[in-house]
Image 1 (cartoon, rainbow, N blue to C red):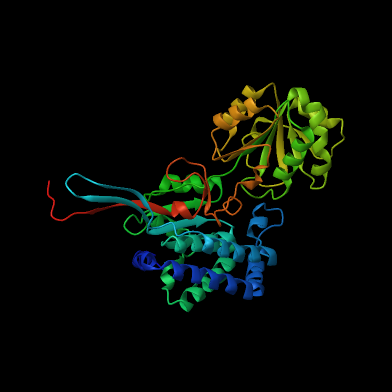
Image 2 (image 1 turned 90 degrees about the vertical axis):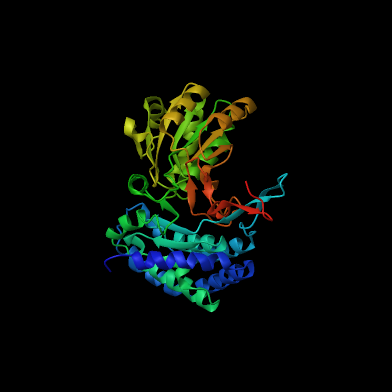
Amino acid sequence: METILPVLQQAQLASIEAKRLTDQQKIAFLDTLATILIKNTDLIISENKRDLEKMEDNNPKKDRLLLDQNRIQDLASSLQDIAKLEDPTGKILYQTTLENGLKIEKRTVPIGVVGVIYEARPNVTIDVAALCLRSGNAVLLRGGSDAEYTNEVLVKLIHQALKQHNITKEIVQLLPVDRKFVKELLEAVKYVDIIIPRGSQQLIDFVRANSKVPTIETGAGVCHTYVEATANLDNAAKIVVNAKTQRPSVCNSLDTILVDKTVAAEFLPKIIEGFNQFDVEIFADDEAYHILEQTHYNHLQKATEENFGMEYLSQKCSVKTVNNLEEALRHIRKYSSKHSEAIVSEDAEKIAQFLNEVDAAAVYANASTRFTDGGVFGLGAEIGISTQKLHARGPFALEKLTTEKWFVQGNGQTR
């Protein structure tokens, strides 16, 4: 293949059919696809294994790449959740009748053709296809070579479900992994309405710098949890351990612990038991290092500047002691990727200040940042977590795959 132009043209035509699909057709497709995924669990796992075998065991992407029986079941369940959501298109956002009799409405409509560029995350293939079709869009999927076999089998199964409902398969297309076609996709302003990168900061930066098509970033996560002086320290330890260890390879996992100096000596030893179970490597500033050294923790190192502002995506984190809330806020302003940030505190005023002032897509009080997720938030699934401020912020899900359109009806009015 020398060009993806035919694929782009097919997607544009398919987007017209996607807009014509009824709510019942969309729901039926999603239910069918959920059933097909479960029936083909062994096939999916087999193809996924081929991808896994290409990746080194110490690669933090490997956990994201893995599809096992439980994760396939979760994908099927998410399809059923999306099917239960209200169709986001056709909603009347504003209506009025002018003095001259013109009737004006603003309604939600599909975006059109959505291009998604992502890395070793085969779950994105299912989530994005489902969300785009449910919202009346066509989608072009460009997954990474790390998940090539898995993505191919998943799209074949999506096409099976589309065929069963007499829906054109061009509504969901998988682009070749050859990098030479990425530039063509990013410049396809005539055929593609929006590009969404999901993956590393390197990928996001590349798309931002090279795309002529409007983009929505689903950013990397550099997430902090601040343990304030009044915090319930047992709760704080539980929250921190969960945020770091429950699934470290995802963007809402904890990267840096900020702890008030007045409670650091009491709090930091409380995380050791939980961290020991996962061999979490800690990069601690001088004061935190001195405290943790007394626990004889085996995976302790002194922090350097580069240990702050880093998205670890593995069982690693940094620790910094701070004098007060203001210092914690300054640190977050400097190093945060504006994804998910948390405070653990019993002081209502300080909680309110933290939640109001921290510039992030999701802010938490007394809870783990691991909850930043479209499915958990009741959105069915997500394309990613947007860390920008235009159009979509936070879990980028069904409702944000629409845009607005003005409908004006008259009976001969002229101006």
